[in-house]
Length: 209
Image 1: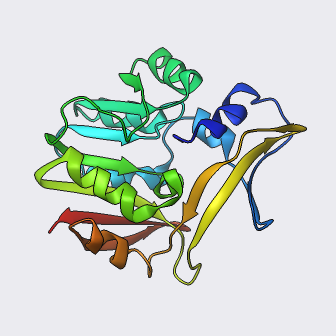
Image 2: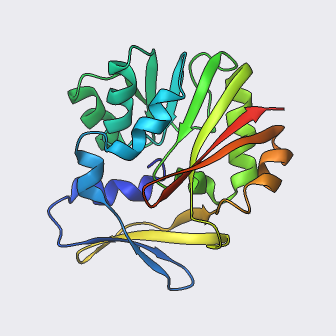
């Protein structure tokens, strides 16, 4: 997760529970143990859609970055959290510490950009984030993004991570469901090629329009 506030959850993994708390009071439990584990079956559909150099934005501890690399793909994880980058490198994958809105390696030459685990919320503006992804892609590239289930709606605002008694800094965040993705995608010059469920989770493939 790229927002620096998620570093609280990564540094204090032993806390009883980790929550993403929105400014409107909505709380979502964060699957921190899943982030630290191996890539789960639901991510196989994402890995299978990657056929070239892939950028894993908000890579966290790197489980997907590792899975992509093991599939034979040139893969780089990106996260603003130093702890996340260190954990990804410990797993044997390549990762860089950076804000994804700052200059990144090989801009305009990536075949795929991946946004999992709610990372469509990074920065609090999905349209701006998808425009940034479009800048990173080559002309035949795709964005593979995890979305909220149909009917969940959208939300934009401030949020923070609460880990046990620890409260992280607030940051801009957003949520986007499968029905709402078309407008910000179009604003970024992308088209929704496919929406597909994997278990209880939903993913989309966005192609350069």
